Length: 241
Length: 89
Image 1 (cartoon, each protein chain N blue to C red):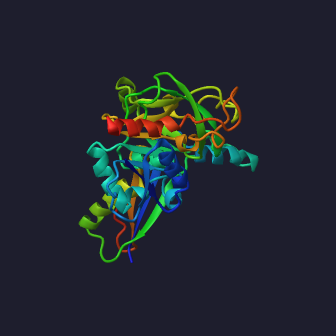
Image 2: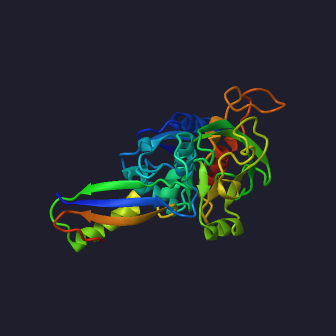
Image 3: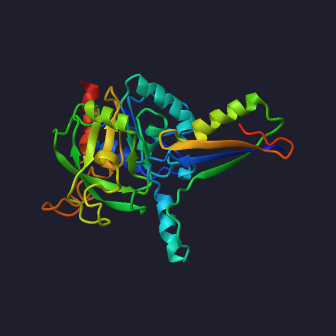
């Protein structure tokens, strides 16, 4: 099972995403932004970072990278695609997912372990969770505020396409942002397309896949959190099934 | 060389965190009486050759596909800056 991870200039979290793929039991494959070759992968991760320096808008220039044309075609053909943080911003810029991300409402970079409610377990990337389950994975960004017009928000709600919502229980952050860390509409942390194969989220599941290197789990110990791993094992299972 | 100036602004219904930060800083410096600030972008495109209607159509497309994201931003103006031809598009 080959899962590709795309590296753009300015990508930061490709190594962690490759590692998460390996820990989940799949074969990690590095994909390069400048090559229009998906190397026979069966799923794709667009990792976090500041691709092309986030110049113009986050994800705006990556959208036109040679590899993205192939990614868009593959996604439209049903291949599982996961966009994390900057990868989510890129998926929005390509219009594979609706809406856009603007600067956090409190205007600061925020890094914290963020509780999320899993609302949709029918996607390729979330079948390993239970509906309503609260998971805790790292969140770290400056442009994390999800916005969309009312019609799009209503559509996402009605079709059950909100995959993750921000939940209370973070240990720190600006006043007024205890649950929703950035002002995102409807507390949206992650969404999916109508087919359920494309998922984008701002928090980072790839940083919570191995005990000792994950977020703190209150009551269970420091750095013990592995709540992100199920995203990668979910896609593995959905491809085998 | 004629220049085309494109102005892009955050949509009115979208909160503009950068504008808000500027608005909050102004009174600290003693600039009173400014009710709100919104911050946009100005692009200056130097165009090779004459600016024909066809060139403007293609620049308009560039403005709405790359220079702005229609989900959060509006292209508020595309102006040709040329002394000989002050035409607005």
